[in-house]
Image (cartoon, rainbow, N blue to C red; front, side, top):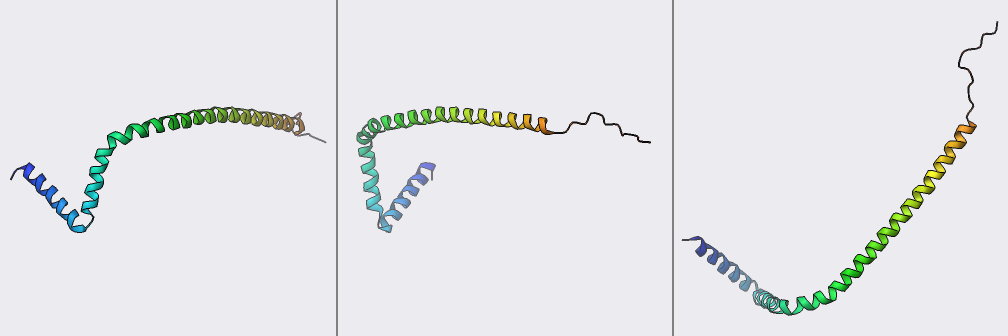
Length: 105
């Protein structure tokens, strides 16, 4: 037996199993219906889906740009706060003029 014969036998086996399960006829009808209606429905779905996808992408780009600006502003505020805290810390820390021990004696 050749490879083609084995493939045909497998297809026949699966078809028989589907028909015996009770849902075979419905599954085959749905499959044929999908194949027949696909060329008709896909262009119509494409006409509706394209503007929706385009609007979604535009909104996503706008939100991304606004997010970049917000993060940059927050980073700038954070850096200002950090610089102020460092300046205050340097002004408040006691400075030791000489680190040599003092000899009293």
